[in-house]
Image (cartoon, rainbow, N blue to C red; front, side):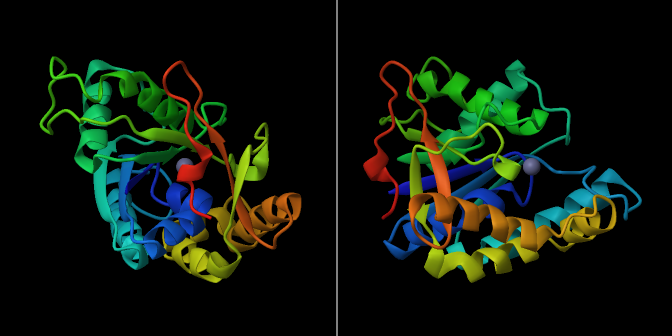
Length: 235
Ligand SMILES: [Zn+2]
């Protein structure tokens, strides 16, 4: 299968579904990562948005290396993602680029504007992934992907319907998150958040809920004709 993890910022994918992606990879699936924004205000330690964006793309490619993932940067501005004809076209094109069987993304209930907008844009364009009368650089798809929403940072307002046991992958997940050095400096210096510790805690809590040590939780997108099949998540 082709698996597309579609996040708003560099580091979102590692935080919320890296263990699940490792499992997909181990069963022979191909991993694609698309990121809607450059995360280019996500640090006060650099002089310009361009400088931060370049650093974060490099960090993202490092983090994605164990997945042998193909990575696409849409490069919209951080904190400014909106539903426009331009963003719709870019999202549709990115989905068609990956030609996915499964898409993983943010929950529309996420309090981050970019996270919620990314989720919403995906659900908005899903109907037309196969429509030739909505052209993009990539050709229309001839299948309909399943869509799952991943957890919300801190776990607020998110009750997983299904869990993936990532216990064997937990240290690799933390190593991937640690590739985002610019974010660790920002979180720990400015927000006083012990970044890796918090990430471990969220996976531990989801594991505690479902009876294993570490887990990632998901909710299936449910709309008429688009109900994702839980069996498409790795075991
Ligand atoms: Zn984010």
